[in-house]
Length: 235
Image (cartoon, rainbow, N blue to C red; front, side):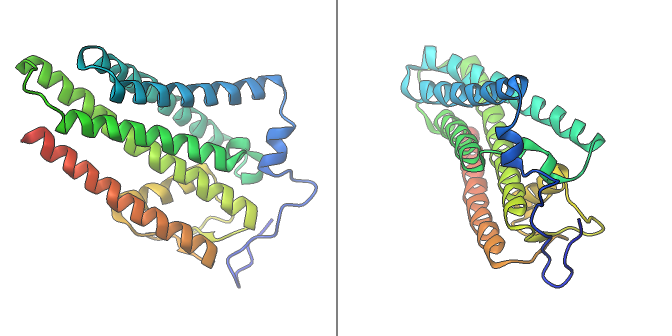
């Protein structure tokens, strides 16, 4: 399978290489259990984030602590899966990680936003009734939540880009890479998250440029929220 150099697209998946959605639908019980576990974890993170935002300080802080713990484990497990994928085939269509693309993106984005909201609440909430030690631990917990929320947001976009690349048969061209894998898309998403630009990756279709544009705007406001959080912590 090669990329058409004229338009930066690769041919659509043929019958001998199943698409990500087909792989997901034909997965066995073990794979379905993993997918269910991921969804349950994402729902748990949303519940914990909302719990922090709607609960009194004494109990609410424990919601945020557990949000941090679960989010950290979620990211670590994702990193392990990513590392294993590097050791196998690099053909994107043989990885089910982009299955149920819209649901995955929506869930992870909601998780990220709950973490962001919790962190902002820590920074700008009423801390006059807290002791200095409590304020310190609130700041630490909020900082961790902010960092994890940032990673979750851009990892969601990495899967979003991978899914669209799989669906339209192109849209991005990575230097010296005929068929990009998960690491390539994660690199692309993190680059936009930090620099608001596509760096050395070429965006070759209008549809993909639109998604990149939206990501750049979202990343700008998210990073502005990070700055607001820092100001709130230091005030």
